[in-house]
Image 1 (cartoon, rainbow, N blue to C red):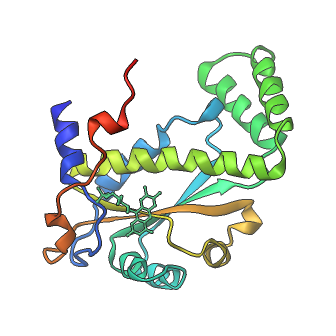
Image 2 (image 1 turned 30 degrees about the vertical axis):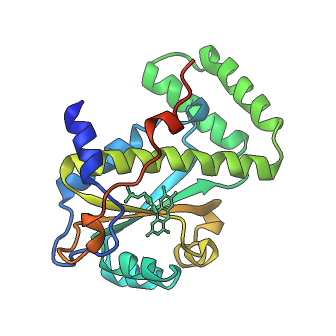
Length: 212
Ligand SMILES: Cc1cc2nc3c(=O)[nH]c(=O)nc-3n(C[C@H](O)[C@H](O)[C@H](O)COP(=O)(O)O)c2cc1C
């Protein structure tokens, strides 16, 4: 537990990456597994994560980022785009339920109730509500990445400061029923990134928690 808390104290949202250092395939696999293990509402994981290590593509995507975020896109080892499913529907539920049946080795009839429950739940939401709901799930996956990376001495920057439409267009996400909800860059802090020396600013415990 101490290791985890210390890693959270070590991490910060990096503002300048060391372009000479790249995240290894082994570490990237751990980060992907951590994202894969993320919890999600009703277990649907209604998103995909696009992992970009190709320099040319990173530079192309930088056009979608504002201010210093463009430098982060360009200089980080990898960019991860968390793209929520748009207008999630019965097809995704059927896929999920089939996965539950296969992984747990239970007949489809035994999980039919789960499918009906999920379809019914989604049926109560408007398209806008569904898209907000799927986008919310991407924040949980992002959190898993942000919490795991420092345990591997990897830095990360979560980002909302980008033009989703531009990213959607570059990566052809709209045709795939996806929308760029969140971005995280990963890599290694530059020795000259002044932010690494700043004290962490968080609400005092008494202000954050209400203890009953
Ligand atoms: C959802 C989300 C969006 C963020 N968007 C950006 C961003 O676009 N650019 C950036 O440099 N930092 C961004 N940040 C980083 C926050 O500003 C930073 O995490 C916060 O100020 C706390 O500081 P720390 O992470 O260094 O401890 C974002 C963080 C989160 C969680």
